[in-house]
Length: 468
Image 1 (cartoon, rainbow, N blue to C red):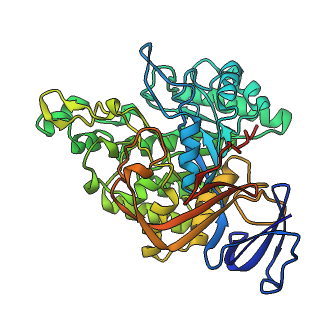
Image 2 (cartoon, helix red, strand yellow):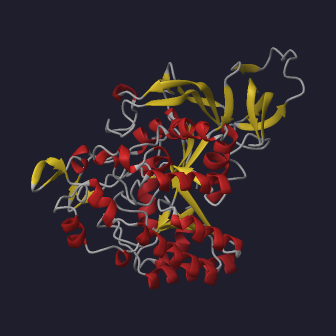
Image 3 (cartoon, helix red, strand yellow):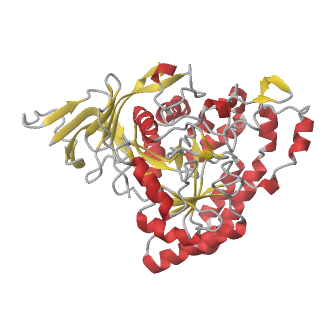
């Protein structure tokens, strides 16, 4: 039996108070708030964290681990992998990672590909890891075998994914996917979420026209004008209409356009089974911050007033989750220069994705505390909400009896500067480099075992489990 104690424990994501947390076999067995100051029996292993906050481990439900290594035009380029992705995640207080079905090769769009993914993850994960399957043209018959094998949801693109081995779906193909998920729900009772990268190519302006408006250059302003809000808004409406028709759980990933908030709010009020997340990159940076393609992601980081509305969407409860959308790449895919001006970056051709899984708790806390949000709010967005999304809310996402003993030992009053030598993901590049972030993760604990310690770094052995 272990006891984790602090004068600041976030209990059930509802209150913070002194408590002793009793843990046995990786599970929370009891939370004692009445006898915090009493003597604890000597035969127990006691971990006393004083005034540091004990909060639930972060559940990041949107991470691109990219393992096995992606294949681009028959060439393998060095990407993240489970070891560095989960080590970086644990350094940021993440105890559960949900792996996206791309950009690994093969992508997780069949039972066979899923088995390859599982083999790659064996004995390499420092956090717990769950898996999403992909819905792509022609793989409808793979949906049920993937659910049976243990995927916790599916993702589809409504626009070119940028990865040749993961094709985007037409509206008709998305509808076929929803029909199949509804059939499985009706016949077996099994229900998983259907996630959407929601952008429509037909709602974007012609690229040549946009470039002409921006003097032919491929600047960030050009990229932002081309990736307009309408492309997101129209795609969200398509998902809402189909979701209303088939009554399956649907989810908008990485909401960037603040216009989508009203669409989603109205649909939720009508009883449509729709939800939405945003990324902490959108909440931390606005377009005026962009200095290089390290900031490029799709949909894009938008203007400051758009960011303000995303925060209000969280406050109103329309946006329910905050995730990383960690999408790292080899620097050669990021450092792309304009063909007509080698001194300028080409934001249209550079890789769209941000390395960020290590900094979510800190980035959100840096901004949230200035907007009268609390750590309890953060646990609802980044622990409870994300766990619920992928059907893990019975074991993950809160400090409560019967739940996994997944904790972050966090000092909300300290801060640190992001330095290259402290980056734990594979490629030491991120837009957070050299920035000061609020809060310090002292330890990350998975099922009662320390997997990350700020002083001693990571556990010698990977202690994560596959959630299948």
